[in-house]
Length: 276
Image 1: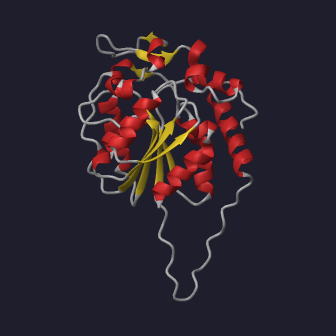
Image 2: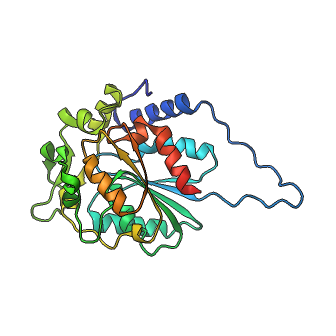
Image 3: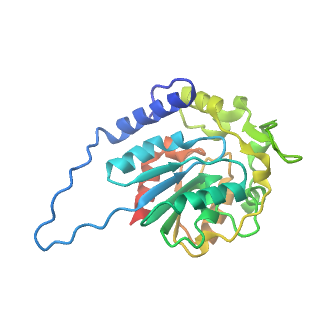
């Protein structure tokens, strides 16, 4: 799917763009035409807000985001601070307050915990889309959610911890050990791309694993969920439990933890369904 990469985030971005062109072809956005006499103009498309998770950055959305833009959707890839559920959710909530009109909010992995909290009581958010993500319940932590359905999050066995300024006692930046990153996070992505992702991964605060979540937006906002059947970061068993209790429209895909990179057509289709 992705044939070339360079080191660092620029390499990932270039590879993702190459993938989008390879998968979707050279897509031209049609020029707007005047509506026929008496015809009602099409309503504006919702803004798609894409939220990345831990050990990643917003470049992971390049392929899907490019395709959505080509179809006329306004797209914003939110830069997740990765400092903890409460802080990050508040940051996203403020970000969403600057967007007028309807919003489809998409979260991957830990980003799902943020959309679950940030969208609560926001009337502009019309749909939630979880891509192999945490759809937490009130009072539930990421660590507790990993155990739903009897699964085990292998990533917790392979974390590298590094201190950061201002960290509270017991907290640290958590990275996936680069030696295990490809097989755990991106097993169906070309090795060169996965290696670049491992080297440029953004850490998440370790406290994010145990912080309880707030009132979930999925209780009042329609939700869609993509289960990654070969996920080794969030157990697929846990993903199915979270999707079911959220009442989400659910699809399952043979994918690693990053279906937006390895299975972009499936992710695109789910987001477009939610956008309707």
